Image 1 (cartoon, rainbow, N blue to C red):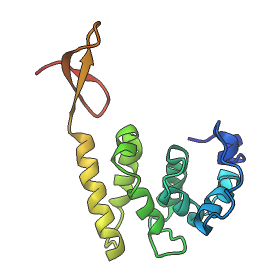
Image 2 (image 1 turned 90 degrees about the vertical axis):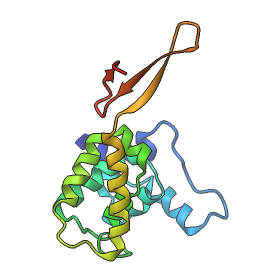
Image 3 (image 1 turned 60 degrees about the vertical axis):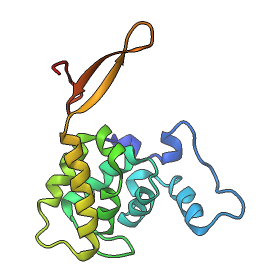
Image 4 (image 1 turned 30 degrees about the horizontal axis):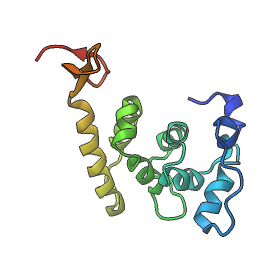
Length: 166
């Protein structure tokens, strides 16, 4: 979670490699993303978050902010349609959810509050649910031995703990 002090800073300030101004000849979307990266994160609107998250910008910082808004209004809308912020969050991708299972759990809780999601959200919810099911399934991790060769294979659960049983 971002501290109150961090919420007064922009993504460009919070991250080592700031993006600065957009390159000459950039599209409106690229220019908008660069502009929003310079806005204090605590001042980002639902539409700002939707746009940035939709472009997979700084997901580790922005998805928790979006979840805060979605807890209050699960169908908070940006400029596209009711629930478009939720749709952008749902599309964060399996890799993001694998690294952030607690956030995936929060999103599942928010989804549990929806009575009848719109047609626009149904596909995104189904994809997220498939990705979330993958998170609950243990994965295989191969360990390198001292010589750099694959030596052991362990099962790794959601919590990151290794279960050495076959």
